Image (cartoon, rainbow, N blue to C red; front, side, top):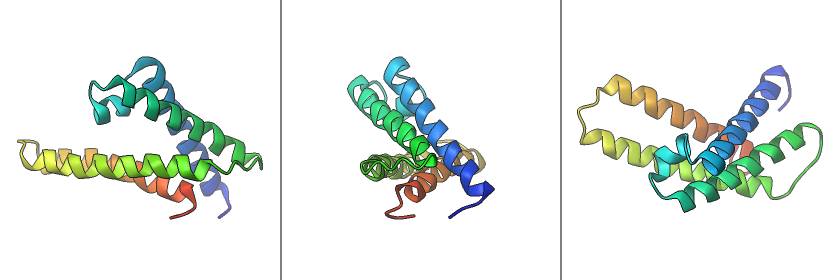
Length: 123
């Protein structure tokens, strides 16, 4: 895949992962806090994985290939699948409107799809 759209998409995924990694590792906040609740150990581990994956994806833009990037991004994609499933299960028992749920789940589905595409094994 090539082109301006693909380049911008790759940068956006890398920046998202960098921000998620920093927020999770250093501040224990952001999406990783939503996913893992108060389990700081999981938040930090996922934060480090996200940060490294973001760095590695950026390096790939400059032609530097790193073999482990596919595995790291795939791990994060699997975590996001679990987030989506639990989000749907949680919504079923709540009073949240379908539109609010679709908006929230839609964002997570976009992140998940981007991670799968970035992993190259499933993209």
